[in-house]
Image (cartoon, rainbow, N blue to C red):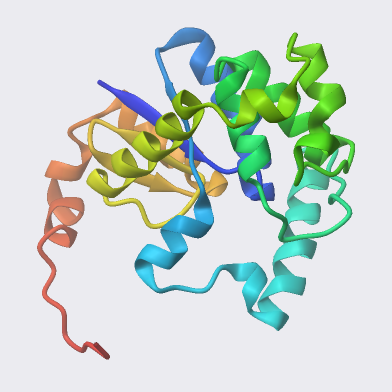
Length: 208
């Protein structure tokens, strides 16, 4: 079954899911699709969790708690939310490999470093063999790849990151990873009993 993982470096929850994605990618083919979460929010006319004051504080504390529970390092960058576009473009420019994704995540979320400008990312880019980081991030191919990933996300009907898409089914959030793996082991689980009924459950009340 085709598997894709949509992510944005701005999300600490993508970082929390990353070890499981890296493990999955070691045994199965996983399309890594970096994308701009802000563009998705704009498309849905929706606020992100960091744009709602009380939710912002809760989200940050919860992410840190989750990291501690998982014995993972997590240190927020100097400001958040930040512009993730340079990091996303660097990921593509560096080949969008498991190694590149992991290194960028560690730069931001394990060490708490800035990633919102080409200059901030220059030392990391150099480790990928990229000397002119601004030029590398500005190539048409890099921009077109990110745009293509966003168009993929629209076709997949994405509504958040991180999201695993397995054979067209969406599994949103780091905490849904076990659910996604259960589906991967038993693709027929949505066609049976109550799971099947939920797919056609009528809407009783709508505010739209």
